[in-house]
Length: 320
Image (tube, rainbow, N blue to C red; front, side, top):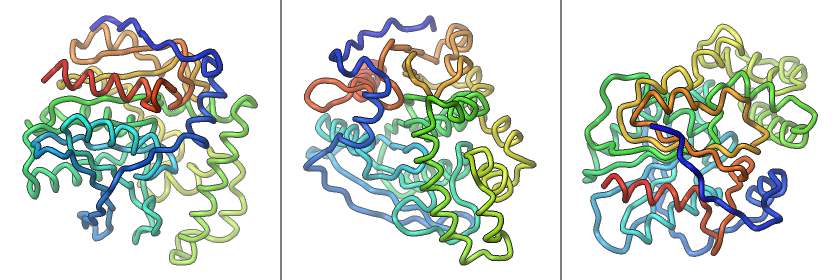
């Protein structure tokens, strides 16, 4: 599919990638969304919490929403699209990845960009226990990479999965990791690192044989975090092995369901490889949109409904 011409035209202030990213992360609020929590037990005895919200009308349509690094099911970029889909006769479930629901998970491992076994478990649970005939996958950043990897790494996906919508996708994890370590992204880098290390300190109290206080003290960068924790806890040789094996870029050619990727050209988290033009042109199922503006998850638009959320709903309606 050729690259889609984007129609996103934000207000002047939000043409600045830094402003749109920070506003969206720290200022935006979503009101009047009621969620019900369900805990599911995973294959290894760990748990994931799902936050459900429902359309007023009975429906067999569901959108599964996945968050980004250190996100959760209550972030505005999750509750915003959940509310929009609910108002358009689609139920929504906001996934809290392992350890992200306000309670530390039970295992030494947690979540990462390529943990598609957890997404598969969620989808299997929903198909077997709920009554949905149309399921849509929607992801932001880390969660978007996970969705695209899930769709492309297997030859067959459940028939119920009809489409996927993703935004701000770090398709090439090593490139995005390098971008996050540049000076222009220092504020983001340090904020992510602070939250990740603090959670790791909590986990270390229960897994002292796996991780020492000295190990944690040696973590000065996100690359250090992925070297000392992410790679070791999840079966990779090192951080580079993790980035290589979990980047969704390599899996895009094999995606067989209609899939939308929206990556802003002024997203400072993304490297050039994260704009998969060649892959989109060679795969009729892959629809790539590259707005000039939007920063990282900062597609601010009118009435507090973001452009990427409107496009996700439009995409669903187009293929239905």
